[in-house]
Image 1 (spheres, rainbow, N blue to C red):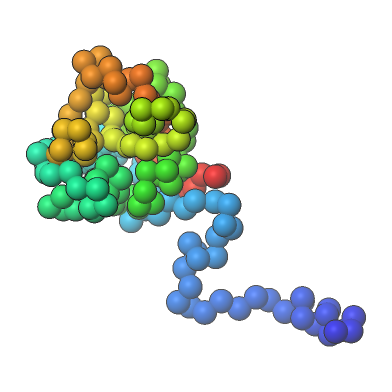
Image 2 (cartoon, rainbow, N blue to C red):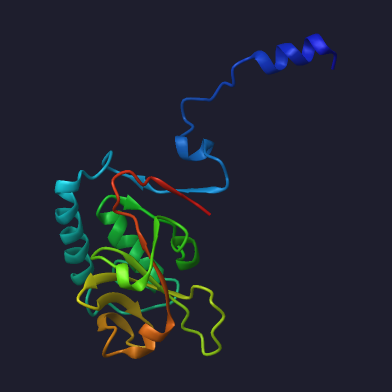
Length: 181
């Protein structure tokens, strides 16, 4: 290719078919969180949190099955994905990918509606193996393989989870549409 051909090639605007979405064109080092609504204004944040909590609690007692994505049975990440998606927020399918979206949150800064991540393996590796949704007052809801269903646990009463807590992620921030991996 000569200089003129190269110049012509690179000066042409890139054409995208109308069927492509923004998500398909985004850089591979960014995980996109898509919202059904454009954003959640601060005054609506509480109603979104209440919606997430209500939807999550409606599944209390739903059986845990590894790999299940609902609504009649769930694994942990299938549960969180279903609840958030039903509230207008699309997150990845598996917990290790869910742990990379949104704003990083430490235990002491958790707020209602945050995702909470754990390393539940006997020999702790620091890798995400479990996820739930924080409800406030040290309570979180999750699809538990140990409890064999969707349950609410308290960090102070179920110290297993407090000891294995890794971090939280907040996806309800109005200006947060993606997170770097």
